[in-house]
Length: 107
Image (cartoon, rainbow, N blue to C red):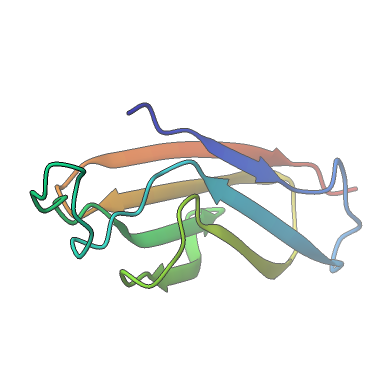
């Protein structure tokens, strides 16, 4: 399955403004508890960690568990201090790492 991310941030912010950051990652998030139609177990496959850095500093970390639904959607708030990039990392059980970024313009 091809996974992809969606990141939403304001197109611009004022220095010191608190902005809302929204992200969703397209992923099935299999718990390992379901069975396929032939009765075999569907292996666990979840995104277990999400990280976001801004200007090189970690600003958000989430540890996800099997109870999280498919296509996890996360939102958090951040104080915009200067223009820069928000870098996101999604880490899966199988060690697969996906990355994406969004540019924040601070006026």
